[in-house]
Length: 181
Image 1: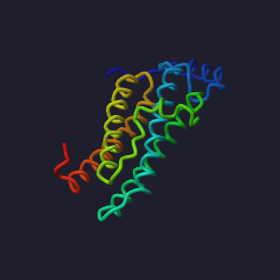
Image 2: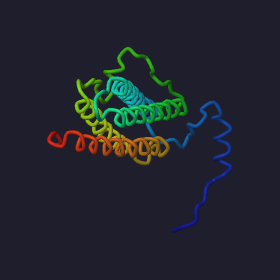
Image 3: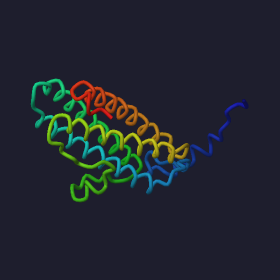
């Protein structure tokens, strides 16, 4: 491996001439506008997940509901943290996070499906997590090396979504083993 050498004078000069760009340096290789568009879709997805998990938290009832309600609440809190991380990254890219409720469902990768009992609520959350896992994996591949910071943010969220999916799958297996696919 050859030594790392960089033209520091050139980098310093570029930094001074691009102060208004914040975190977006001339070395940024992503399509910033397209990345912001995709991140706003992810933001909508996370908000829809927060809303669905919150509804499930409040609507869950039955003999097994107490521990499952706590799981729903924890997932809602974690999904909110994901939304916050995505909104922060959008701002870092000099974009505007889209929190407009109009069109939220159409921007989201997942759907808002209420479920009508405890098992169907868990299953709908699992479907949404699987959708997030698949689309976020595609986003990671799409970003590649063009935007390593955004890729890392999505990878961290993806890992948590995989954890959620495993937890939900285990819950379905415990309370409705005959329905597990």
